[in-house]
Length: 172
Ligand SMILES: [Zn+2]
Image 1 (cartoon, rainbow, N blue to C red):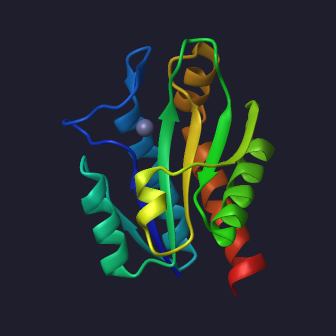
Image 2 (image 1 turned 90 degrees about the vertical axis):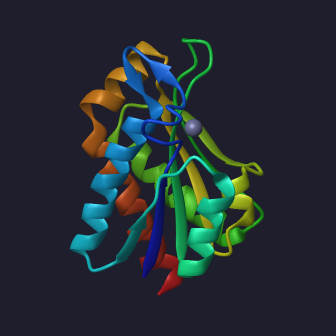
């Protein structure tokens, strides 16, 4: 099973959203590294790629012939919004994968369920395989920011388990 992990934005070039001294790019990267390690431990092939060009991300994933594509982000809005949402675009398998990941995050973390949603984010619209974009939590909300900092490993374990749940139930 080949899983392409894309932490959103780019260390040093595009920090993404920010809150309480933490950037989205570094938080997403740290979570993605842990997801990678969990998946490598169960013999998945993993390609972790963080880049500030969306076309390049899609090209890398499609050239590598990923079986699954997972982009990891942190949200930001007005300081009061909080919670987790997972997006898919135009694919039933993507929707199933999104539910598996969303359910695992809800099971492991005291987050707010903002649901599974369809939206045409570039990287999940143009990748060839089932693809999701996880908005883990709101980096500009004090409670969510604390979760991101203190429970980074739980987010990673949940995303990895969501992926393996999907593979076990729908793709094997
Ligand atoms: Zn983002």
